Every structure is written in structure tokens, then in C-alpha cells.
Amino acid sequence: MRHVFQVRIGPVGFRIGSDWRAPIAQLEALYAAYPKPVDGVPDFTVRLFAARPWRRIVRPAVMIGGDYVLPEAAPLPLAQGLLAAEMGMNLQMALGQRHFLLLHAAVVERDGQALILTGVSGAGKSTLAALLSLRGWRLMGDEFALLDPATGLLHAFPRLVSLKNASVATVAAEVPVDRLGPVLEGTPKGTIRHLVPDVAALAGMDVPAKPALILFPSFGYESATRDVAQSEVFVRLTQASTNYVAMGERGFDALTALVQGVPARAIDYPDTDGAIALVEAAWAAR
Amino acid sequence: MDDSRGDIVYRMARPETLKITHLDSFTAVFHRASGITHLVTSPVPEILAALGEAGMRRVDLMARLSVDYLLGDADEAALDARLDELVAAGLVAVA
Image: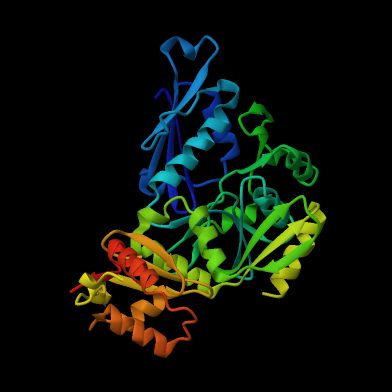
């Protein structure tokens, strides 16, 4: 690869190689305050390469490669190279992570205790995590919760927060522009803009937290809160995990302990102010 | 009921091959050999507990379940079907 960038996000080191300079320059700028992989050895490698040699120059199209690949993944235009890098990093984690049980969830922390926000795509995990991080919570991650089977603790994975569509303006209104990446229009997920996690998230990157509450948010409904039974939590979290089966008995032990030890609630919310109020109320009542 | 099954002794799979965790409305059973998690509800946990390691014939199992639980319409065919499923899943062994 002509251009290379390395970064450590929480316990995971990445090496991203690219045929083009532009995506690497964007990563260098947005991940400027992040550390490098321990001893310079990454856990995962992502490659952004031209679909055909001439496509590096003419209508450049970015293919995502790495230790783990999705063979049917379509190339992205070069303007979305940053998104391609992020997708590649997520893919390596989702398919290759063996140390932690991975849950597709956002995690924030306060007073050493972690709040897990999980739900289907579009439920508002990233938006809520970003807004909570602006209201005194430490952002531990907006995409993956890393549950350590040996300790039951959650480890932070504070990658760039991926804001989508309406949430771009909602969050951008509250943060300085130098914490925002370029606006990526017309991606497979709509409009995307990345938010750089704040100083507290980066400073606390290596500090795990004990899970204290699991919330299943749903956007677009009147405000409501209900308890979620352990059995439903278990099923929903196995569905939200990318590596539950691969983790075998360690995954079973970690997940059953989490489900039995941590209360869970579903919250429906009509808007972000309503969501913040529901989260705080559920946290107080945990 | 198929009488050719009458003398078969069913027993729970060896305890070291299973990990059983009771959640509120079902029981999660991890089967170590296959790595599969089975989510089961009544009467499966009751059947596994009744069979235990010693095991028993199905007629004795039905009698035990009838003593321990109020079986409104005890259905031997249904019990046979559950036992067959549990044997296929590796959670119950035949002696």
C-alpha cells in the first residue's frame, strides 16, 4: 500500500493502507489525538484499494480489503474513502474479534458505571451517545460494546462517532466545527458526518467500566419506558452480537452473567430532549 | 405410544457436557460439544431435572412428571416427541 495509517482505539490496534492519499489524510486529521498500536503491532489490517488499476485515477472507486472481507461488498467513490476505512475497521472487528464478546451497541459511562444502548440500526444509538457525551457522560463507543468474559467489564472503543442524516445537524449544533469530519453525501447509509470523541473519551480510553444498565431505545414514538425480561434481553443481545457463536462457552457465560446481573429497559422517545430525560430517569431508577 | 420404546432408559446428557442457566421465562442450555445455545421452556427443564444422570424409562418419567407437576392432559405422544428432540439435540442420551 502506498499510504499507511495506524491507530489504536481502546484495546484494538488498526493498520489502514490505501492506494490514495486523501482517505489517509482525513484519518490522520480526525484521529490525531489517538495513540498508536501497542509496540506498533496492529490487531487488524484494512486495505483500501482500486477496483481496477486504472480506477485509481479515472473515477476512483475504493474497494475494502483486509484480514476479513465481504466478497459482495460494492466499491465506494473516493470521496467516501473515509467511510470505506471506517466500514473496513468495523468489519475486521465484527468478524475477527475473539478476545471480547462484541455487542452492537453504544456505551457511555458515569461514576465508573456503564450504560449500554443497543437496538436496531436507526434507533438512535450514535446520536444518543453523542448527546450524552455532551452532558457529562464519558463516551465509551457508539458502535461496539466490548465485554470482557474474564472480568465482566466493558472496555471502551471510542472510534469516530458516525452521525447519520437528521442527527448530523442535531449534534453539529452543539459541537465546535473542528470536531467534525467532512460531510459525506449520498453514501449507502445516507448523509454521514463523523464526530471526534472529546478529551474525556480519549483520556479514559483504557479505563473499563462495570455495566449497570441496558437500554433499548426506539425513536419515533411517544415517550414510554418498560422493563425488559431477562429472556428477551438474552435473545436481543445474541442478535446484537457479531461474535456470540464464535466465542463459544466464554460468550455464553459472559452474556448470561450480563443479563442476570444488569437491569434492562426499553425506552420509546419522540425527540432527543425526550430521550435524554428518559435515559436520565432510567439511570436514576436502575 | 410405541411399545418398542418401553425399555429404553433416557438420561440427561452428562453434566459436564452442558451448562444450564435459568432466565425468567426460559432456560438457556449451552451444549459444549456443538457450541449451540438452546433456549428451552417447560417441560424441557423439568424433563432434564427428572431424568438426571441415573435416567429412567419414559413410563417412569411420565409418572414422575405427573407427581411433581399438575399435568392437565398428560400426552404420551407429546412426551415421546420432546424426548426425540432432546436426543437429537444431544441434551438427552439413551442408555
